[in-house]
Figure 1: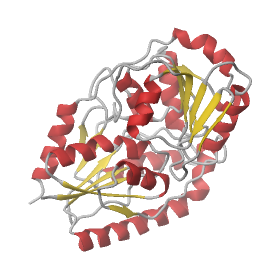
Figure 2 (figure 1 turned 180 degrees about the horizontal axis):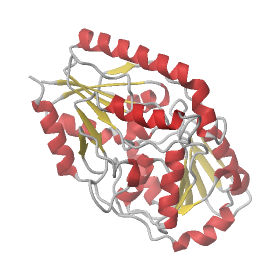
Figure 3 (figure 1 turned 90 degrees about the vertical axis):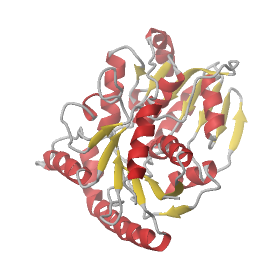
Length: 353
C-alpha cells in the first residue's frame, strides 16, 4: 500500500476542506493516507478523519491586522521564510521516519522534497499582489518559481470556460500545471428551511473576529433567524440568544445540511468557499472578502460584476441593504470533475515504485 502525505496550509479552513475530496479519492484508490498541518486546520482534520495518522507541522502564524496586503505580509516575511525552512526540515524527517512515498501539499511551499514525488495544490499560479518597491513583481515570479519545483501543480478548477478562478489560474501557462476540476466536500440536498441567514466565518485573525463582531452588531437588531458558524475548531461552544444561534464548528455533513437549510449565505469569498457554493447550487449569497486579501477581493468583484453573488465590504457591511439586493443574484452551478481528479491521483500513484 502506497503511503501518501496530504499537507494543507493553515490559513482559514479552506485549504483543509478542499483536500478532503483528494483524501477520499486516495483512499478509494488504495493509498494509505497520512495528514499533516497545524492550528485550526489540524484540529479540523483531527475531527473529520479520526482514523488517519495526523502529524503537526510548523505554524506560519500569519495575521491580517490591516486592510493592506503589502503592509500585512512584508513585516512577516522573515517569520514566513523561517517557517518554510522548518517545514522543509520537518518533512524530511517525516519521510524518513514514516516511510512516506509521496506528498500532496496544499499551498505549503516548505512541503517539498527531492526524495519522493511531490504535488503542489493551488488555484493561484498568478498572484494578484500590490506593487511595493518592486516586491509585487518579485512575489509573482517567486511564487511560480517555487511551484515549478514540484512534479505537478494541481489546479482545482476547469481548464476552460466556465471557471471559478479567472486570471488566478488561467492566461499564463505553467509547464507542470494540471487542471483537476473544482474540489468540494459539499453537495446539493433537499432540506426544510430552518434559518433565514447562515454566516460562515473563517480566515486569519484578527479579521475573522472583526467580521463576527460586525455581523453580531447588526443581526441582534434584525427579525431574521441567524446561524453563525465561527470556524473555531478549538472550541465546542454552542449558544442561542434571541434570534441568533452560534456554533464554534460544524462537521462537513452538519455544515452541508445547515447551509442547504438556510435561505441566505453570508460568508468570505475564499476560493474553497466558492467551490462549495457552486457544488450546492446556492443562489442567494453575500460575499464579504477579508480586507487586504487581494485574491478574495478579486474573486468577490468578479462574481459581483457578473451578478452571480452579491459583494459587501467588511468595513461598510450593511445587512439590511444587502438583503434588499441579494435577490438579483443568479447563482453559480459548476460541478466537480470527479474523473479529472481520479486520473490525476491514479497518475500520481503510478509514479511511486
